[in-house]
Amino acid sequence: MAIFRAFRAYRPAKRNQALIPALPYDVMSSEEARQMVKGNSLSFLHVDRAEIDFPQGTDMYSKQIYQKAKENLEALENTGAMIQDETPCFYIYRQIMNGRVQVGLAGCASIDDYMNNVIKKHEKTLAKKEKDRINHVSTTNANTGPIFLTYRKNSAVNMAVSLWMNEKEPVYDFESDGVQQTVWVVDDIKVINRLSSLFKDIDSLYIADGHHRCASAVKVGQMRREENPGYTGSEEFNFFLAVAFPDDELEIMDYNRVVKDLNGMTSDEFLSRVFENFEIKKEEQPFHPVERHTFGMYLDKEWYSLKAKKTIIDESDPVARLDVSILQENLLDPVLGIKDPKNDDRIDFIGGIRGLAELERRAKTDMKLAFSMYPTTTEDLMAIADAGKIMPPKSTWFEPKLLSGLFIHHLS
Image 1 (cartoon, helix red, strand yellow):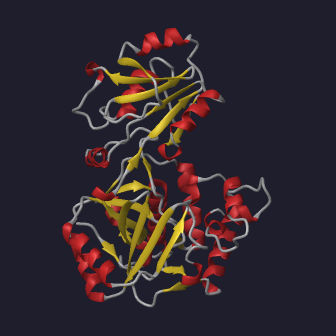
Image 2 (cartoon, helix red, strand yellow; image 1 turned 90 degrees about the horizontal axis):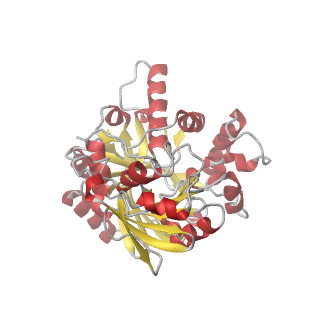
Image 3 (tube, helix red, strand yellow; image 1 turned 30 degrees about the horizontal axis):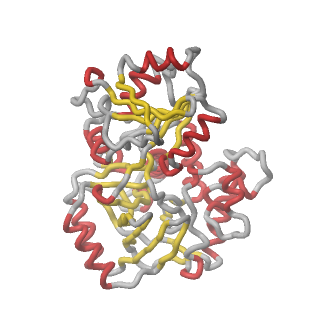
């Protein structure tokens, strides 16, 4: 039984619908963020990456950065650049990218559901990244970026959302980075209660993207509980900002790999080792896998297709059967000596949004070798989370990204 409730969002005034929202803080560097905000003082990156308002080289984890984020958020809210709804609402958030549509419901999820594993995880979090967002949420007193949740499709939720979209006008409708972003405000108390009730029939919510933001939001909620021992459980700090999408509308893109060297081998020696566990075929064109357990490989300006031999595939284990696991355990580690891909600087990861040309470019410049992957599926993600297991690093790449600054949830 999942708790999902309406809240009084701060959101852009309509005139600022395309100026304030920004990509999530963690998909860009500080330098890229500085470039993105040029000529736009309203960009939400001034809140999510407040170091861009300081000279380059300023410690992005210092107290003054978080304080500046708070000041910038308050300025957006106090000047009327953002407005707050008078009553708690849900928000329908539709994104259209390359003709594909995904429609989510923005609301607040429960920190208790996270702690009780009603909200399921598939990724480990890093303490340093958590600490950054804990400081950000604590200082701004707000969840500024939504957690990307998914759930097994529910026809009643779909129907309620579709009816509202068909009968009401959106409050926002704009394009950002090639993605059409459209938002409806659900402000009818009967529909709000209906949606909340329907989510109580949903057994589990799954974190698709935003594990660090989610863990941090929950820890801030726990800290507020300690500071307020008489809390009732209904206070805003018991909840965090999320957008929940039905699983059948999501697409996970491939998350590809590039490697710096052949671990001391010649190309022929390397190919001989690869052949121990994979069938190899030379390809005339760049190879993008179209089925599980197949891989593209780019070496010495040539493309190959690899197919995992049946002897190395364990379909009974939801983690071991992932293509990212098969490649890691049967090639990257034993052949190339990459034992810890998360911390080894000989390997890098490239989201499928960049295309195969980016793999070729990297293999011709600062890297030696590239692998194109078949994407992990939403079913894989849910199976691993249901089993209480953890995905290997860099297993999923979701597009489009949810914008920050469309909805702000204050903790008090």
